[in-house]
Image (spheres, rainbow, N blue to C red):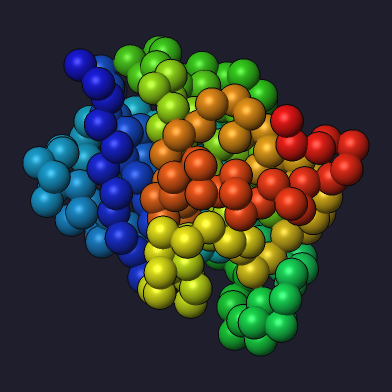
Length: 233
Ligand SMILES: [Zn+2]
Ligand SMILES: [Zn+2]
């Protein structure tokens, strides 16, 4: 059976439930959204008790905000890439470095803090989700944050967090149009990571805001921006 990806729309971000033999929640939204996530799961007839892992695309306030609450409630381990573990431990998104003017405005209104939580599992490039019955592996795709990851399924579906954004106003307008997120800690690294995900055969890319994106459109949009040393083939 093809594992399912169930999207849960939250206040400003998306969470996803991956269901294979066991269920994995990808991202936990902002602080105080645990009920919304549990309701969203039940709407898909998914019992929250089935969750075996809280997996984070990165350690930002709108992706790890309800992790502590869900951990305490469901007694499920939380996983994050090693390089974003300090953000989770501190309950602080760290620097939100704007890529354009709208990002600068947005950063004035975003509270970077969230309930601090100790990750139970530190993951790295190549980590496999096979033990959850999910034919998917983790790609380290830094740039937005140092520990940003993408989850790539064998069939080409991918969940890429804030590696890119779909549309404008956090995905409210034209959610299928590929674009850069408002923030990136390291832009050249971000570009290499977008290229990496596309070169690993991603076909449909689910995101933290807007999407899903078709890989062909993303390649068209981003290829001109790839660094010269990594010229598109
Ligand atoms: Zn983010
Ligand atoms: Zn986000």
